[in-house]
Amino acid sequence: MTRPRVVVADDAPLIRQGVRELLVRGGCDVVGEAGSISEVDGLLLTGEPFDVLVLDIRMPPTHTDEGVVLLERLRAAGSTLGVLLLSMYASPSLALRAMSAGHGTGYLLKAGLPMVMRWLRRCERWCRADRWSIRPWCRWWSVPRGLRRAPTS
Image (cartoon, rainbow, N blue to C red; front, side, top):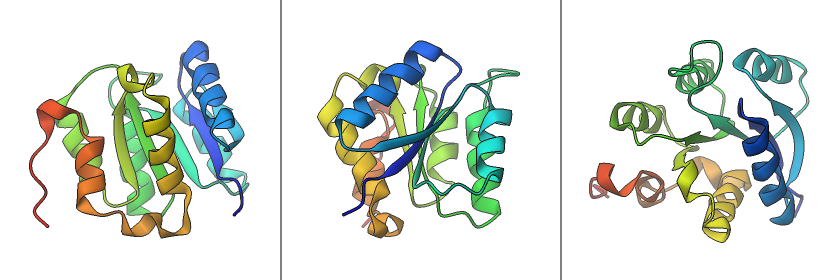
């Protein structure tokens, strides 16, 4: 199996470095990093293939919902890129918006990062070829406990 190729996008260099280290230790190749949405756009335009984008929800310039807006843009363009959104805040509206963007999408609070093995297994799931068929219970477990609704199937 090939190593998953991941891009990490977060405006905080310390978070980017920590996520990079976790991914590398978990067997992923981090092929790019970005500190803003415009830098992510640049990486997407280079055509360099990667499997997963680990993306902060609130990034420059406004620090509101740039990550979710990018996710929605990617899905509207038909992209099947795996996207794992990271957030410092448990925002029900942003989490639900992100999860409604479609399959291959995950939401994780940054406070959950110390649970390294569980997080890496999620990343691996999105990196595999069958990530397009993520079952509802996988998406359900990606949502913070206070926002969960029981899966319908």
